[in-house]
Image 1: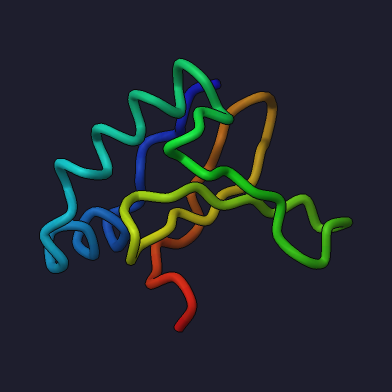
Image 2: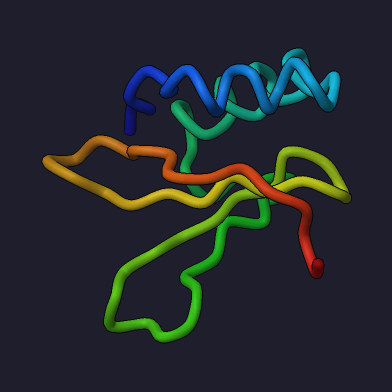
Amino acid sequence: MKIKPLRNDLILFLRKHQIEKKFEKQKILFESDNFHRSLNTELLEPKHLRIYSFRIDLQYRAIFIIINNEAEITSINKHYR
């Protein structure tokens, strides 16, 4: 499944937190296997909203929804904040 191009604010967040390379690595994994073990992809609560996340690293996660068989990242944030 492909990931839609990121919005400018998400790109700036990646740069600010110096995780661009980590995101690119995880993006490649995600596009080849959405549920690769190192991504720790999960369906978030409440499940009926169909909002998912995958791990960028131990601290950051990408939150996404699926539209027309493409993942649209809506947020990147710290996990467990």
